[in-house]
Amino acid sequence: SDPDLVERARAARAALGDRAFVLGHHYQRDEVIAFADVTGDSFKLAREAAARPDAEFVIFCGVHFMAESADILTSDTQQVVLPDLAAGCSMADMAAIDQVTDAWDVLVDASVADATVPVTYMNSTAAIKAFTGRHGGTVCTSSNAHVALRWAFDKVGGVDGTGKVLFMPDQHLGRNTAVQQLGLSLDDCVVFDPRRPGGGLTTQQLRDARMILWRGHCSVHGRFSERNVADVRAADPGVTVLVHPECKHEVVTAADMVGSTEYIIKALDAAPAGSSWAIGTELNLVRRLAAAHPDKKVHYLDSTVCFCSTMNRIDLPHLVWTMESLAAGRTVNRIVVDPDDAHWARVALDQMLALPG
Ligand code: CIZ
Ligand code: SF4
Image (tube, rainbow, N blue to C red; front, top):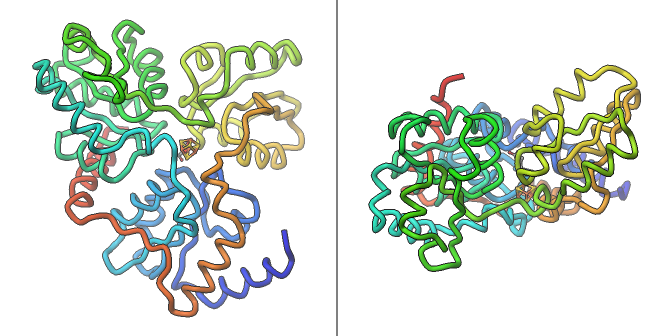
């Protein structure tokens, strides 16, 4: 990157000193990660933000829902700042709060709402987390989705009973976890499409279902295909295919290993020299993994699947502008969650933190 810009970034970072704490998500650009005080997935970063009560500015290099979670978990006097307000998440945007409250009305009309617990993935807006908290549910991450689902089913008669989970917004994480880790069948899962009347489901389908999956997906992970897995195996028969659970069910079924971002990083760290890997997750992370493990072969599962475009909106110019503005005493791009939503979202986040294991 531009040496002048790097110099300005260093100067602004030094001017802010301990007043600022810079968080960098694993999918961020190298030029941004270079200035991160800590890197992690959305869950780890939210906890890191909460553990820095002395930082006046929490600069969140990630996407909007992550900055919202950081605002919920930090104190009212701390400012959470997103360097580019256009850094959203297409998956989180697939579950709008009005759509979700309408969907709940459909479940009430079908007489299944009382036996349904909402579970929302971390990758959702604060309003959806608040909805989940108000209805006795929990937030989950891709690392603890199976624990969250078991807990939710236990509230309504157990995994072997007839109770249900409304899982938002990622249908793939919900389906993969229910089928691979809880032993439910694909037939137990239905997809609620918010664009169709009644979600596109009959009352009988809603009554028979165990997992009501929101029709949402990740625009990056959802693009990997079974064909990619077959191709990489043909090209390199010794390869271990490791994918994120936001990938489609047929992709995780064809892969050798499935796990969250932190799991993928640890798997590569533990892998023997000379081993060969094909990774199905975001490209910035896979490139850094390849650079960090020159003694291993690290393939990208599909070279046509690119970066997360919204994550990539945070670049060095935006970070420099943010840090220079804050150092000059200007408030910019502060993320503030509505207090009532923040309260109920916190209930759902605290429920996640209280889950076993
Ligand atoms: O796909 C994403 O955005 C992930 C895995 C986020 C996170 O860190 O949980
Ligand atoms: Fe959202 Fe997917 Fe990008 Fe993650 S990688 S921020 S889920 S669009």
